[in-house]
Figure 1 (cartoon, rainbow, N blue to C red):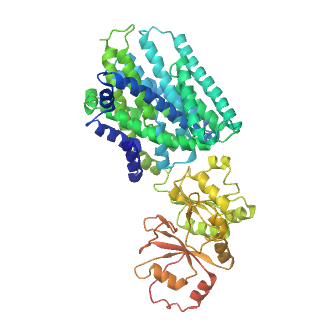
Figure 2: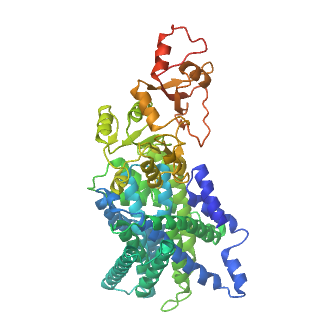
Figure 3: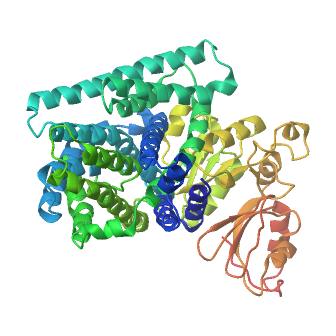
Length: 621
């Protein structure tokens, strides 16, 4: 657990996909010890104890991850892209399955049975990798929705396909097409029924207050695991369908709120993902990867540069998706924890299968290659997507390398003027305000504004946040601003949430708001919504002034007086430096200072001779 959390923190610091470091940490740990060795030592001489304990735990953890993933899927996120998502799940997955099986047979030399099993395992993408990757890249909402929905929904499909192939292998390839279709349909319907029934039960429990609040998160977790176990006992691998449907149903019903449960599950998911990859990675030896041989490299390259692009391109023919977005979707298919766990489970099952198959058959001898090949694909696809997806998205104009844009909740006069200044420096701004007068003034000024309630769930799901990196909650209502901070923290980190008091930081209304719930305080201690609006009404203006070695920030204050309120700076690298009470604010030569200057300061400056400032030269916008 410590290694898992450390790897994810380090990945956040250096901006790489966490799964890459998790696998590397796991491989490194494997040099010293493995979970198998520890568990076998605790259990005595039972060499099979670790496998019998680890694999069920891995399976249950995957169920929790898919349940949490389903809770994050809202119908509104699809925004007309349901057809594209279904095409990817139905057509792209089948094409990927077929092509991967063919390549596995002819390039890796695997038998057809194991090749079809490997194709089923590798058809899935990793929601545990796609989610963090999209948060890092921040493409447009359409691409984010498509890749998120595909990553969650494709996992049960891949698991069911693996079960189907395994059943065929178990019956020596004699299962009829009708029987296989019936098994798939039965698995899906059972999972669907269990998921919906349990979702109705949980809604009734919450709506009728049959459960104390402090038990909600744990109760949902236990019930989800019970649904998974019950569904699996009826039909193998239908449990993954059940927990996925359960999560989606709970997320999209309108009777009760499950946001507090989602917060609990997100923390659990982070812990489980970190632990699982460390555990599974430590069980893999580099010598196992060497057993694949040199053909593993072209196999990996074909999956990345041929199988995925071709399957996506064929599946999305006729979809209203721009070519560059189809190209990006075709490039992003990292495999994750589901592929690793399914490969581990079915590798073991195939190796121990005895009924109807000779233990020395080709299938049994190839079973040990399933896990190394899968981990090779995981490492390769994660490295490629983690290092290449970001530059590719920026090259295609689908994201920004470091989003500096600001989402303003509130469209007072000073907000509109600040947005105009930022837009001149190509800083993206988005303004939300339910006041029609403020909205109209913002649109008349040519700003990207919407007359909406920022707290509306529908609005939050439909906002296009590409290029936005911070939130300024600056309405005249302190309570609304605090609620906005809490709501939008699921889209942005806490460090990116800023808030401005209406009356002052010493007012009773502001002090009654818990500091742990408020955003970071904007600007200096004098800055309030009322103060900034009054300064603008009195003729004050927001200016961007370049600093030089001869004209420093101190010179700026001398020129404009103490009444000037410095808001932020624009670095020479194009990054915004927000002035806040909770952070350092340092500007150097070459940066631009953005400040609200009072009208009397401007009048005084304009009345001076042109050569009145002997301390330096400032360029103002």
